[in-house]
Length: 201
Image 1 (cartoon, rainbow, N blue to C red):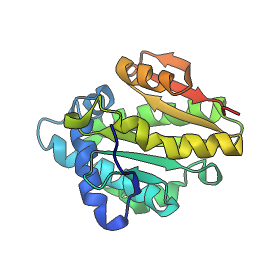
Image 2 (cartoon, rainbow, N blue to C red):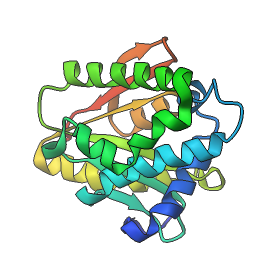
Image 3 (tube, rainbow, N blue to C red):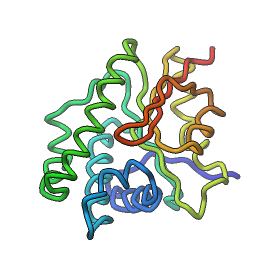
């Protein structure tokens, strides 16, 4: 599968957001966060992904294709830990109002755990895969591999590790094929894995 990989321009955040909403519609983490919401699930997911992309976009390490087949958003080593004020400014200030108390509790419990494990396991400078999603119609065609290659190559050249969280066995298998190894497997509050890739020098 050949496809051109480009940096995501801020004028295309809406299209990239829609790609991620569709890619993660059946994801266990999405289901957990939205489990107390009976309606407007896509609207809430859209706000979450838009804020995610708006947070990452200034660092200029979001990759996509001209046809929006998929999106990979990375946080560079110099920008971790995440900046709480920037997170709010990117659009996450809306989330409590959209999720309600129960949904917000789920959201905070999960991402507080993500942040805790991330800080415990990654003391060295590293690249953080903030999001990777491929449109359902293009899954299994090598798009995900192409989207992460620019940073994997850069990490190898710089001698830096990469880190991510994921929530499906299929994704775990995908990342393992690209050099990631499981650090943790957690069952609560929803099953997820944390993974790390050492530089391939």
